[in-house]
Length: 115
Length: 113
Image 1 (cartoon, one colour):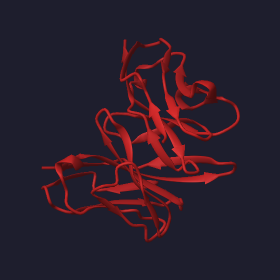
Image 2 (cartoon, helix red, strand yellow):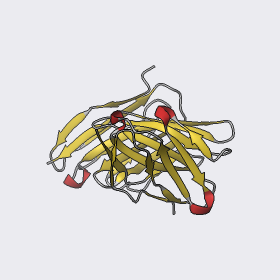
Image 3 (cartoon, helix red, strand yellow):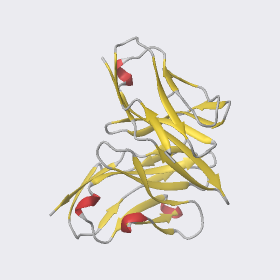
């Protein structure tokens, strides 16, 4: 049981390049989300998904696309990287049970530098 | 709109001393509240959570937190800090059935011998 797996762990991009950050979970969780972590700003929600085929925007969605074709995978795409997207990116999956009890599991992060 | 405030950017405590990290939230409905810990270069580990019931919740590593609705607070406490507790601590509120998380800016804890 691997939990939430993010790849790659590190990436350097040139301005204008595109790339996809991968996120996979093996816990059959309905909910998945992407966050970026910047110094002094905590984690901010980029996009989230409440199930396969359903995605929505979070706090800071500009410059990022997502899709959710399967329960397991939730890739984050940067179409044209900018230096402002230099950050550490975390993927999370979560589930809710009982009377609204919920728990989220985070991946180990992807450190992205855009030069 | 929901928001989470952690007023202390950095706290230094002596090993063995007590600890309280402050968290205030703004959210219109009953919140789901969480505390996470992050060691350098690592992901986030859940310390504890509140979603209903007893307002004093116990977590891992000897941490506890108290939900006070009247003060919109969810402060984290530990009676005796260990050197291994040095890390970054994040308070978060969960919305949308609790599965979208909004985080505070974090409190960095330094433990001195």
